[in-house]
Image (cartoon, rainbow, N blue to C red):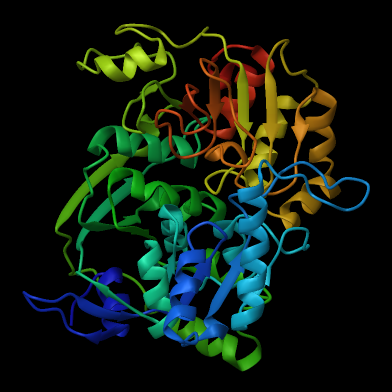
Length: 461
């Protein structure tokens, strides 16, 4: 049967076919959880006297509500509020009660859920993966079908290891060509979202392919798949290849020995057949992409660095941001720079940013936060000397966590402030009430930090 990558993974996990009246039932290989969207689901299990169907296929970490400041002299972490502290403590209790593997706050394996899943080898090709978080699509970079679910669905997965789903359509995005100096995977996905819109992939699973994608590292592939949801997609996927296998080999939860050889043999079948067609298909010339930055209140509102804000009747968004049509963002003062999040907090992101910071200082009146995605990444950056580059420049080198991506852990911007951020959403108030977010790559964010204004990062390279 001629099939797309998505079709192959879907069929392998189909428990019950969908009908006009009912959705399909899909088996779930891996369930990732964190402290914010799981408490009610655990309570549902208690209320109904249920156990987890597959506790060994469930993995937990604290990330959203965790402070990114160091523990005090007593080893205690200072939380933004009592609710955040309770969420983190309750997750640990729930995991102990139900026999779930957890990487708790302070553990050397702790970090952002969509960072530690891959780096521990929990994420693997051909899997179905769910998490109570929109950016679960990150794991599609490995050829997994990964998508976010709501709290009720977290409970369904706990109890049954299955989930009801309507089958999405397919959307092939073919990206060919070489990226220019200063252009990253973040710029690629922002350019795609600007082109197709925040609803352009609604009801679809995107598969990214082409020479550009094949040349991406796993970190870059994760950045692209991470923001698939911002184009309305149910998930984003990239077929696994040698780059994928090399990344996973030797990871803690990856298969070992003969099991590894068998797994790779199976994973090599996970690709879209040459004769298969997508429900939608577009082509992108990567050589024409330049550094991107957003100017509005959703990721579609993006422009090339140096381009003026277009005339599109986006009155409310521009009013909130304090911009006008035909404004040039280059030269606009910034207050805060945030380098981190499940989109851009991996070691290659930090290396790219450090290349800009090296030998320079954070500009006066600018606050710069650099937040690694996990303790493993933090330790690697410190071992490579990257952390010292940030510290010497005057940036804050923080503990792992979601941090300023969503402003629910104390890392927030103030009303009216501008923040150039490597995160994934620029909604009103996302990083703090009244705060104004401009999404960009680590290189563009770093360039703003040392310049004090929005600047074309290529001028600093």
